[in-house]
Each structure stands twice: as structure tokens, then as C-alpha cells.
Length: 474
Image 1 (tube, rainbow, N blue to C red):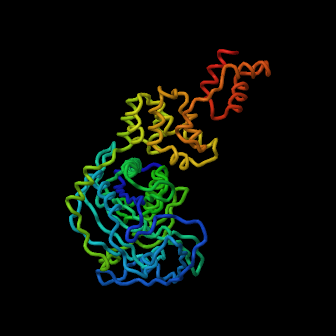
Image 2 (cartoon, rainbow, N blue to C red):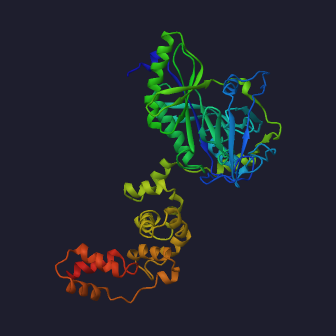
Image 3 (tube, rainbow, N blue to C red):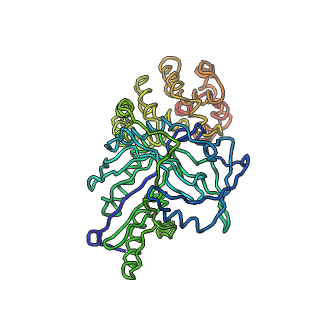
């Protein structure tokens, strides 16, 4: 399926929504997803209201025609704000600071005063019938190999409730996700090929991952706006994988060409499907869906807050990679440090000992191996072996322990020993013990002897020590 994008007059814009790693936007509830049974449920029926233009939004009217009842699962980590039984609190300052950093990284201009708005949403994803959103910045750009692409706006808004199930009469949602802060990044329609669209999405993703955002499936959602000459803009929602962008956009171009032939072009929102096609969801919303939030005061963004964001900008993964490459680390270790967000820990430990490879392994591979052997999650092991404890361990290298002892000491601590106990040298005569195993079990391979010795002295000697002695004895 080949297209002449320039001849087709292709224009693409991106909307990317990313959850921020803070409490909720207008209350102090934790941004915690729940998989257990709810404390109770409530039922609602939502009705659209007129917007600023004095009209009911076309998309809201379309949803109302479905005449659904909405059921909400409520947990002890929810409050009356999420149930729309209490006014919202003040905007989450931590979330605001993160968005200001993101705005700076996209070279945007920040609004000094801005108004929280209500965006009409009556599909059940918001208990109130609207989503709160506030414009934070505008007119930035992102660099790509094919040139700059403008960032039109950056907004801070509430995430929606999480759908559990749906039938002809009802939709069921969990309130755990409702209110989690989202940053919404909207590009200008200045992307002119599917390949460039993917590049823009990847670059935006890199910038977002450098900031304090949530990670994992469902924490980022990408929507693509596509139009060709003579057609109307279509929004395709629900991309999880940027790899599907090129195929999906090419298929949408073909669909719009067919619509032009049949004079059937519509301004609509469609849902992305796994095979690259899309399905109609609802008409495109209009300006009638927005009106001011009267329960929240004007948001005044001070120069001090903006300067704080500028002075504390995080480095991008590409900048971190350049830093790590200076130490001659192999590709696997570099990827692990970046993936596990351990660059700052690496910098801290690099002041303790001049051994980049040992530092990198202590932060990543050793902890992964220990987690597997001790049947613990990597998060549990990383919490025990925090950077301050690793600093204390590495300070003992060359004094009470050798480099080869570091992994063993780490494992002993995870097993429950104190640092002082873990770094105590055992009185094992390793050479004598190895000779005994060889004598009692003649003819085995070096690997077999290694297994026997390590099995007996588990956690008390390192594999490197045993291997060295075996080379000497066999």
C-alpha cells in the first residue's frame, strides 16, 4: 500500500496523554490501581448540558442516545471528589511542577494565569459528566530528523475512570484511575508522513520518560489526527504501540480516499484496532463541550515556579547514554541502567570507587540475579539494596572485602544479615575444601565441582573465588 503523501496533501497531528507519578489532581487520594473487590458500588445516569456556546456538544448528544446506566466500583483509596459529591481541592502542585518541566523541555511559553475548564464527557468515564482540564503552555516544538514539529498546547487534566465491562444497558467502571493527573501534549498538524509521525511520538516519549511520570502499559495513550486534501480530519484513538502508527495511518489514508470517491467524508473519532484498521466511535466533539470550572479559582503560575522548573530539568535518555558511554560499559549494562532509571545512582557511586563495571552490575545485574535466587521481586531487592547501602558496601572494597565479594555481600544483606556481619570474612580454607571435593568425586567437570562447592558454602564464597581455586587444583 503506497501513497504519495505530498500529492495526497497529508497532514497529521498527535495528541499524547501521559500519567504523572503523583497523587490525584484535585484531591489527596493515591494514584493506585486496584484489582480487589470494591468496598461498594454506585449507579449514575449522566445528562449532557449546554457549553459556552449555549449548545449541547454533538459528541455528548450522541452518547446520551445510547441511554446507558453507569456503575462505579468505589474503594477505600477513593474519596467524595471522585464520586462528584464534594468540590475539588486545589490543584496538585507536584503535578503542576512536572508539567512545567515538560513545557520547558518542549521550549513552550507558559501561561502566567489560566482557567481550569470543564470538558463535557457523558460516556460514563467521568462521574461528574465532565473532565477537568487546564492549559499550561503553548507554542513549543520538538526536533526530529525531518525537522521541527510545533507543539500547539500542553495541558494538565484528570484521567478517566477505568472500564470493567459493558452490555446493552450498562457500563461498569472502577474509580481507581479517575483523577490521576495527565499531561496532554498536542502537536500542530505539521507532520507530513507516517514515518515522521512515529519519530515525533518516540521523541515525545523520550522527553516524558525523563520526567516523573508513571511507567507501564496503560500509562500513556496516543491519538493521531489524520486528513488528506479534500477530506475531513479524523481522530484515531488508542495507540499503545508506536510501531502500529505507520500501518494505521496508511490504512486511514486509503479509507479517506475511498470516502472521497463516494462523497462520504465525515468529521469523526475512530478507535485503533490491533490489525491497523479502525472503527467508528463517535462524532468529532466541537467547541460546545468546553465551559469554565467554577469550583476552582484561576490558576496563577508564578515566575518563581517557572524558574524552579527551568533550574531542575531532567536529562534525556540520549544525554544519559552519552554520559554512560564515556565509561566503556557494554550495551547490556547501559540499557539496564537506563531502563531501571539508575543513572543518578551510578553518578553517586562513581564518586565512591573507580570501577564503572562493578557499579553498573551492582545496580542492575547483581540485583536481578539475587531477586531470582531469593524468590523476591526486583523492587523488593532494590529497596533493600538502596544507593546508600551500596555506597557503604563499595566503600569497603579494598579494605575488608574484594571486588569479587560485593555480590555475595549484597545477597547476605538481602537474606537478612547486617552490613557488618555480611562483610565479615569466613574462616573457610577454600583450597582445602575444593581439594577434598575433587578427591571424593574424581573425574567431574569444573562446572560440576563448582556446583558442589557453591552448594555447600552458599552465600559465603563468591563464584570467582571458587573458579580461581578450581583452576589451581584441577
